[in-house]
Length: 380
Length: 125
Image (tube, helix red, strand yellow):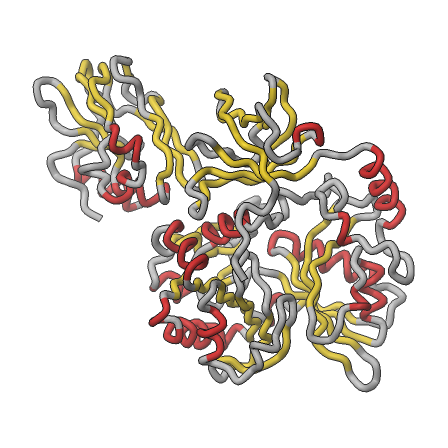
């Protein structure tokens, strides 16, 4: 007898800790993850003004090693991965042959051996990790490189917010001042071996710490203690979503999908036609780039509500009674104090300040202002 | 979480006060407020409109979702809580007090409203 019952959700190494902290848990891409611990607005504001601690262990780590690891990634992904320096990271995408986006990724180049073998870590979204793993494995045929599923080898803890450098500095000898945005190096944090990366998804300065799962609780507790005096709070996925939305960062399944090429998503800059060798999707993406140049596709814009009703993904964007686009993500913005949204709209209505644009919120056309993304940019 | 003993409850997580001069107060429970998360927008029924027990009469919007508001009772709306319209977070901070939603002149009350203990059992599962 077959069963269609969904599999038990996966739990991270920090699961018991989240429950002891009173977290509201939610199913996310097959994982049982903290949605929020208390008020999601307070968590959001803590990250903007102080610091927040996130469990991101659901993200999918894939290790790619070997003499031809760089060539494999250049072939499999749309970015120029071979040009990433050791200790640096790059935002990139993996596309289908037809140019549709399979996932957006961060690729870290971790090490280089004397024998000329490279070591990369590819971090995929939880919901796409298997798809990315399968595609990389398939595309590795003929390359002297190994693709390894390392999803179970890492827990991922992020500390984000203006106080995060100070918090982390109290727990590590690593040269944080020398660690630039989008860089990552191995080190030790609170006595635990960690890959320390200056990356994040909040629009704030911050770090992502990849550690072995058995070290996750110890590291979380050390960070909590180190952040006690400066307002660090545990944060769930709910505020992570409003933080990334304010920062104008795309989320797979909302702003990105297999239905769109990077050019349709306004992210054509991640596609590097000039790199050496062929890559999956090149022909389709060249055509997409030409189409985008001659006949602009819908443009991803920001919308700010004049009223208080919140736009949600899938709601129509309207002007003069006509549908001119669709909301991809929407939420009340704690920082702006108003509902905001990202939406794809026809190019003719995409200029900031375009008059007469609204969102159809369950039948009522609510006025919205078109603005440039991001909604929020931190002061440096 | 404690549910005031003097109130009656619907399975849709509204509470209903006893009637004063035939007028009862309606709100949502602390259980529902916690489940919603931070409430950011409350669309309440219009004063003078008629609501029906178990039917939609407004909506509550939180950071992550929008939820229909049901009336636990049938009757005419006599007042809405303007404080909640202006500051929807009252629903979270004082669901049984300052976060009440509307008052209704009760025409008919369903027989299946729950006591505080029955409601506690309903939400325990």
